[in-house]
Structures are given as C-alpha cells and as structure tokens.
Length: 102
Image (tube, rainbow, N blue to C red):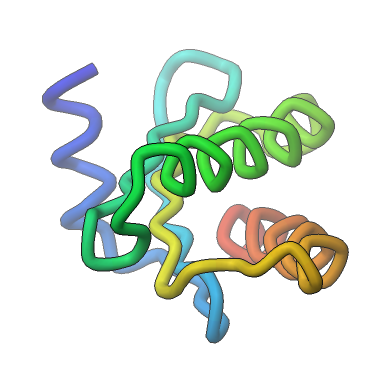
C-alpha cells in the first residue's frame, strides 16, 4: 500500500472542510481502500488520535461499497470534541462522497 498511499497524497482530487481533508485517487482494485493520517499537532494524546481514527473507519465502513474503486486518505485538520461528533460524522460522510464524485 506504500506506493498507492503516495499516489493518493499527490492526487489533486480532494474535498475539504474545517474538520477534515479527504484525498482520493482511482485504484485498479475494484473496491475502496482507506488510509488515515492523524499527526500529533492535531491530537497530542494517543487516545485522542485513536478516537479520530475509529471515527473515520466507522464512517468509511458504512460507505465503502458506495465509494467505488478509490484509494482514500483522510486527514483531520483539527481535533474533534465530544460535543461535535455527530456533526463530524455527517461532515466526513459528505466529504467521502464528494471526493469520489469529483
């Protein structure tokens, strides 16, 4: 997946919001694959980084079939507090769809 990961990071196909950046590149696999990058600047504590990754994987799992043959990299742009989890879920769901439709 290393080469595919780099391909997605260089891709111009992207969707962004104040919470997330989603980059996408077409793959030849026939199904969607996910990469997640959460740096320590975004979430200092490992538990917070893990929580963000779980959130991203959950949304991806629910949409994977609809996304088609894309490699996706999701990068949170800021930490998501407990109060805004529902908003962040909807935000990410829309970004995943948008990145694969552009």
